[in-house]
Length: 232
Image (cartoon, rainbow, N blue to C red):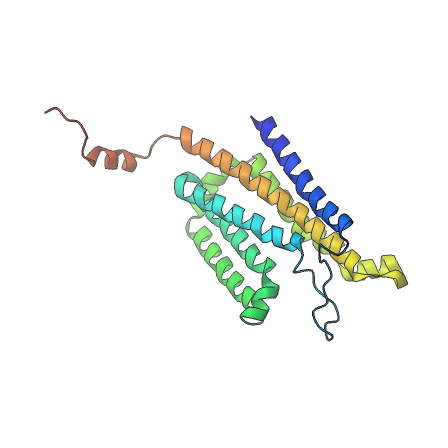
């Protein structure tokens, strides 16, 4: 079963990446990785690119999966709440360009700060349950892939996508679209890993919920429910 899942992950990543590459090759400029919106726009943006649009969609799937774990797998709720909240904050970060123009400048930072503050308070208040849930699961492929995805996105992509690096590499031939293309595709790779890690974590959390004993409180509630068929 695990082999089949990982084959599906591989085929899905390859197909999505190939489709994006083929789209740009067949119709140059279709990925819209460097759009100049006005004459005063010096840097241009890649926020209208299909690559950028796929990223928040993947994060939205992660939020839904973590929400399902938090609802149906009580023992893993602290971890699911934390990672689901982080994925939600990442969505606002990815959509910052549109929030800055439609709502207010730096609006996404305010929302992300509120989400992160709530996550810190919740995790601290449930730190014992979080530790128990973590020890029950770690080490695991899901958490490992989540860590790998975060490392690729927040470390590797940010360093490799640093504009002075590409200016030094390309010299007088520097073109910003090259830097943007490399940075966005590396971030996409990080989100691939994050999504796969979320899927694997969900699978493991469900397995734990199925095999763990029913809490005593739940058994008492079930016992108080009226029976469909009684002695009389």
